Image (cartoon, rainbow, N blue to C red):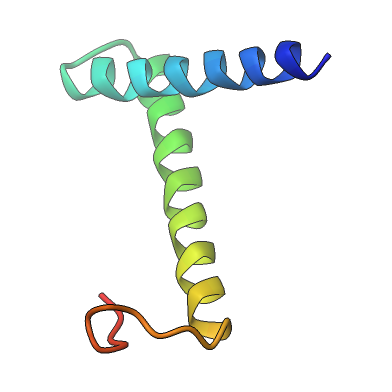
Length: 67
């Protein structure tokens, strides 16, 4: 069951990356729409990771400064 779920997740990630790549090269409107959603999700994950690191109390190798 776990392999099935992970395989589905991998297929979604690869499909999203393909849509971003295709939309960057002038793909159809639906591919551009999917790429906007994929990039927005990526930005939300990045922000959640930054806020999680900030609240954990761990220092970073660059002196504790955020990007």
